[in-house]
Length: 208
Image 1 (spheres, helix red, strand yellow):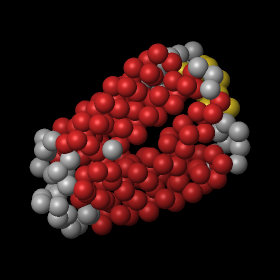
Image 2 (cartoon, helix red, strand yellow):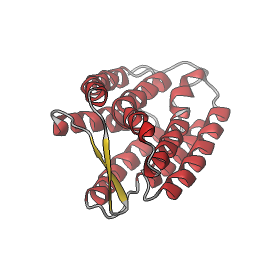
Image 3 (cartoon, helix red, strand yellow):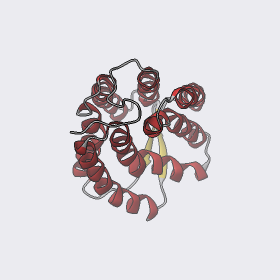
């Protein structure tokens, strides 16, 4: 999420381009889910640009990516890349979070209203604090415990960045999630291009 339709559009194009570069740089099929994440985030930014512009059709796909999809995609991608059993456990946590979030998104019309330089989304989610904790555990936990230097760095950046962005957004000061998505995408491009000692060697995952 960015602070305007124009900012979301620019961020979506830039992050999406990084995603294409990530996909073009993969050396193993196991890297594909995480390599595709920046492209997904870029599409997400473009969807919100449409929401800013008043397109009601974009609200539901935006919510699908933000809520039930990411807590499964991220740990699942770590599991695919590393083969670690703990990543599989985080994926299960993500699935447990995604089920009620999917029901919430499917059961209601999503409301949107501007709040300063942010958009507020009206989505009735049951047990919201518990689901948020599970969401962060699945995504950040999978990255930090991945055993890969680049993915650990990404996990800490996402964890700290999510706290900062969340505080700014709740204060309706400015929405900076798109900046976090851009930073995460650059780190993923570095990771795909071999910038860290990744545990995937020759397509074989390590255990653990």
